[in-house]
Image (tube, rainbow, N blue to C red; front, side, top):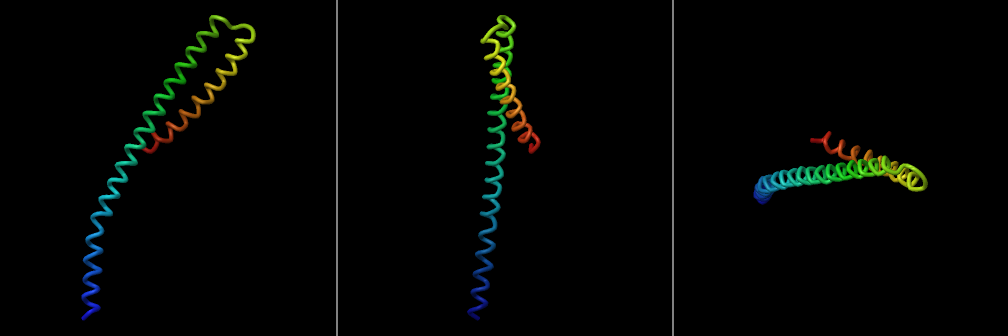
Length: 98
């Protein structure tokens, strides 16, 4: 008889725990979606910023494309393009999950 009572208590506790774990899973999934959306928005801003910096630097090179400044601008342009490619790759990973 004691075993039957213990089994019933265990069964009752198992059924009571299931809804809360389901609720936590939903909450966690919602948090993940929000985090993903926030990360995507941040990456999109960073991509736009890098694109603008590249545009500005390109315009500056068109005005004065000689000497040491041109070499410095070339290395800066290469760095910006690398950063842009990296950010776009990260953004593509997030967009593939949506």
